[in-house]
Length: 142
Image 1 (cartoon, rainbow, N blue to C red):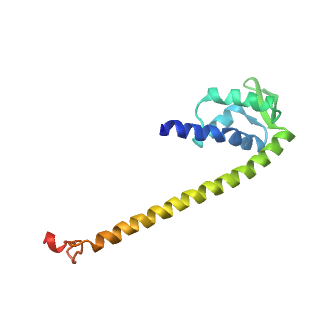
Image 2 (tube, rainbow, N blue to C red; image 1 turned 60 degrees about the horizontal axis):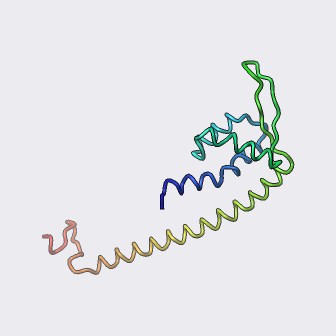
Image 3 (spheres, one colour; image 1 turned 90 degrees about the vertical axis):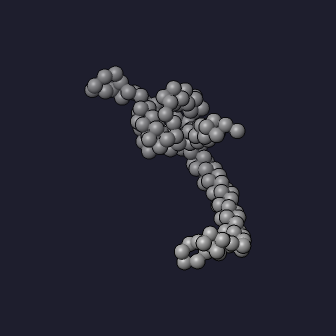
């Protein structure tokens, strides 16, 4: 298993969800989305964002409007459509269920590791020569 590839795939898997959340707050310019995604360590490649925005628009989840800029060409600001809001609400529920399920599995693994590590420490203490005095040395080390 290529860990780096798995990490990239996990981030890509939630990218649309994160983009819809960012846009749900109000009109947003693509470079602002990119900045937020980058600072959240979700995505850092600009070439990924624009095709995804186009795909979401073609699916009817978002729309855009052009806004004149005083310092250059007009800017395209993205907004969620009604279908986009409905889809985001459904994805929110899925995310909550998924996060709860994953956290349950991970916490059980953490508990298991703690129990196994605790057993090893207990077993080590029962091993001959493992008892230490105030100096920190076992009888065999003195």
